[in-house]
Image 1 (tube, helix red, strand yellow):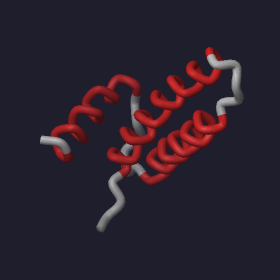
Image 2 (cartoon, rainbow, N blue to C red; image 1 turned 135 degrees about the vertical axis):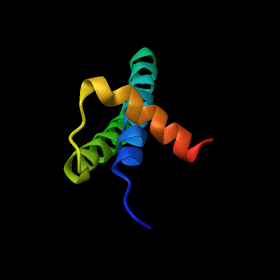
Image 3 (cartoon, rainbow, N blue to C red; image 1 turned 90 degrees about the vertical axis):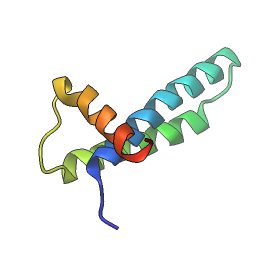
Image 4 (tube, one colour; image 1 turned 45 degrees about the horizontal axis):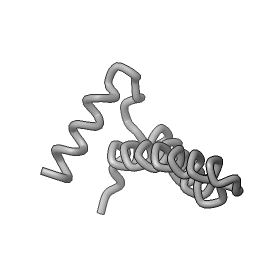
Length: 76
């Protein structure tokens, strides 16, 4: 199976967004955000891997197109 950098990028962004929720929950409960840190590191690793392996560099203006392309390819 071939590596899809767009899928890694979108999953990484999703993990980073989920880690923000974990950070906020840990802050409210006054505890250390261990799980949020691990999830954020995994998400940032996937985003960095996608940037390194992508044949075309990602652009902020192309971000919605990448997300909807991945959703259309794998979800629908």
